[in-house]
Length: 273
Image (cartoon, rainbow, N blue to C red; front, side, top):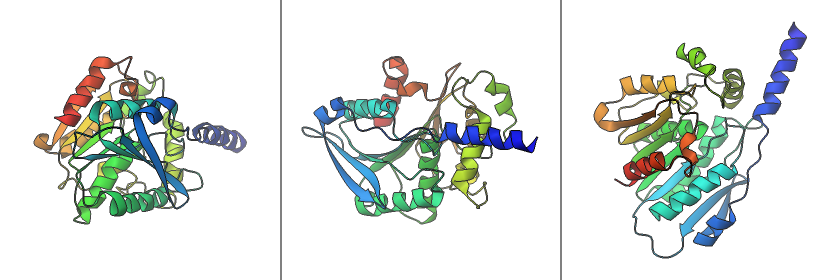
């Protein structure tokens, strides 16, 4: 029995650590200037739209991937659309991943980005899935440190609690064709390391919310991460939170902008509004 469990865990580990980061797409390079900086040997992409930007804010975008997968083609395609439609400068960290790194390495990079690129600017923090968790947790951290907060926090199918203990998750698992609860629990434990899994930096659902304002969440009901959004809804003042919940939508559906044009336009409206 122990052998079976070990083999199962190895299979899960191989599954969740499968993806390395892709490079920016040709289209993105065509419509923008892309520069890179190194932070702790990891790359920060600095994307500036060609021509004159008509927005006075930057976007810090944290990609998803269960803290184990890098930037995907889907992420770059979505970021390309954001550049086209917002004309904002976008910072995209190719942040440290498990199993070699933990959340501490991710937030060290996030702190460096804030101090060197954002602290004197208006900015929006945005992220999908695990990146959504980082986005909220980093916003909470900025609030705790009495630093300048983002103008908006935009979370797409966010992973808010690595413990995955919400009882509603099992009811949705059979409908979720993208995520696996057991794989996420393993990824979460690696991301957390030896720390308390209810530390808000890894599970922002348990974090301080008094400084949180202008938070937008996009979530689908066929996503095992959806139930935790309801808990956040109970904690955050309704005047500070806007939720778009799509029935029967899978995890991160809105990133596929061509297939979900109306939903993407809704995101764009709320992002720029």
